[in-house]
Length: 293
Image (cartoon, rainbow, N blue to C red; front, side, top):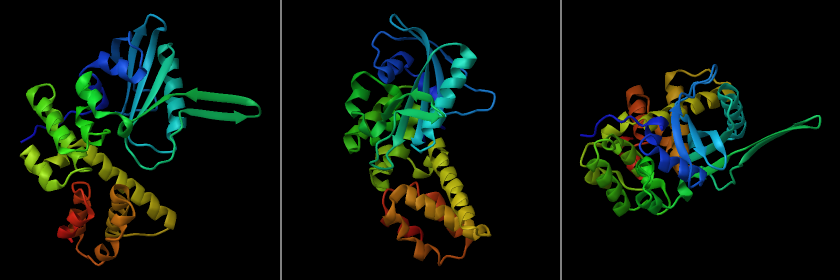
């Protein structure tokens, strides 16, 4: 049985901080001073981490790491806000990095925020790293233990051998083995559930302990509520669950997932609908969900 996972961004980066900062900045002689508390007066998030770093060329500066499950259009403005708040609080220049985990579309992700009002321009550049574009071999060669849980979604990491190699490394290190549930979670995006159970050798219900699993459930709930409000619907609990399921299916499987909705809408029992909602993330293919209908 896997242990509960402490997989905050701060925890992941602290596994090998010097390797991490050199990778995200591509500055070979950069060193970590300290990982500092990044909570601001009106922003409190677990996905952003500030690190005080130093390089011979740049001197002391802040490296702002923002890890997003999925990119959304609000991120450029958010990166500007985080960078400005960090510079104001710590009186140091900031190097912001946006790391996107799951691919949502083929659209190009912007690397800056630009605003122009009355001829006055505001610009905030930031580096973008899309994990689906990162070669999986980098994780094993550098090494980058912080990225081991994300191996299944890295470029070239969607195969059984790469996932087994990552799992072997995690289980061999007391400091890393708590990340096993995260690796299993992201493996559900590329492998069949039965194969993941065979590889991991534990019940897939452990996935529900993963904060990433919970985040996707919250995302489905939030988007479902927003969609319902936009439609102006006065929904009961059943309608709310149906909307959440619909959004989660769309997030995970796109239009193919939505093909299940006519059948799901025939279900009246709330507990049955809750069970379907919980299992959307734990399966790898739409056909696997049919066993719960």
